[in-house]
Amino acid sequence: MLSKINLAQELSPEAYTERLPQLQSQLRALTRELYDQSRSLVIVIEGWEASDKGGIIQRITAELDPRGYEVFRILPATGEERRRHYLWRFWQLLRPAEEKQVLIFDRSWYGRVLRERVEGHCTEDAWKRAYREINEFESQLLDYGILIAKFFTHLDREVQLERLEQRRNQADALWRLTPEDWAEHAQWEAYAGAVEDMLLRTSTAGAPWTIIPSNNRRLARIRVLEELTRLLSRELEYQPLKEAPAATSLEAVQQSTFKKGGKKSRQSKDQSEPREHKKNRKKKKGKKGKKDPK
Image 1 (cartoon, rainbow, N blue to C red):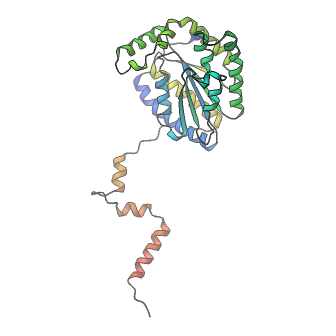
Image 2 (image 1 turned 90 degrees about the vertical axis):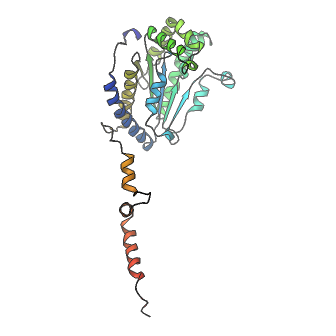
C-alpha cells in the first residue's frame, strides 16, 4: 500500500500561499458549525518521524477558536497508565462537544500496533488483539456521534534521514531529536510492515485512513486541510464560503472609531447607539431648557 503512494508530488509556494488561508477560513467556519450542532471531531495523526506532523497540526489550529480545540502529544505510557488497559488513558482524554469540538492526537492508541509491537513492549497476542479493540473503540465513538479523521504522513526513508540530520546540525532543533527517532529509521522495514498491517486492518467505513505524501511539506499540509474540510462539509451538511474573507485593516478600524488624540468620534458613537436611545436623549435635551409652568 505504501509503495503505491506517489511521493514525488509537489506544491509550489505560490499555490500554497493562496490555498492555505482559504482552507483555514473554511475549517474555522466548519468547527463553528460543529459547536452549533453539538458535534465533535477526533483527528488522529500518525506517521514517520520528521514527516511534519507538528507543522500540519499548527496549520490546522492556526485560525481555530482556541477555546474549542485541544492537542494531545502522546508519549509512552508511564505509572498508572501502564497498570491499566492501554485504551484507558485515551478514554480519559475525551471531552464533551460543548467543551471541546476538536481533539487532535499527535500519536495515539495506534502506538500499540506500531512502536510497542516493533520495539517488543507488548506480547504478540496483545498487539494482534489490539486491531479488534481499536476498531471497537472507534466504533463506539462513531455511535456516540463523534467524527473521526485519521491521517498517516508518509515519506521516503532517504528524506527522513536528511531531515533527522538537519535537526542534529541545528542548535534550535536539536531538542526535537531523540534516540527513538534513530531507532525508527534503523528499523524502517519492520515499521513499514507494522504500518501496512495497521492501515489494512483498522481502516473502516466510518473511520478510514488517509495516507498523506509528506516529502513536500506544503503539499502535506494542504492535503490534510482539504480532507478535513471535505469530511466536515459532508457530515455536517454545511458548505462554508469558498474564498477566505478579506482581512480587516486595524488602522481603518481605529480611524473610524477614534479621532486624533484618542477621543471617540461623535459619528461613530451615534452610529453605534440604538435608535430608541438617541430619540430619548434628544427629548431630554429639549426639555432641559424649558421653565417649569408652575
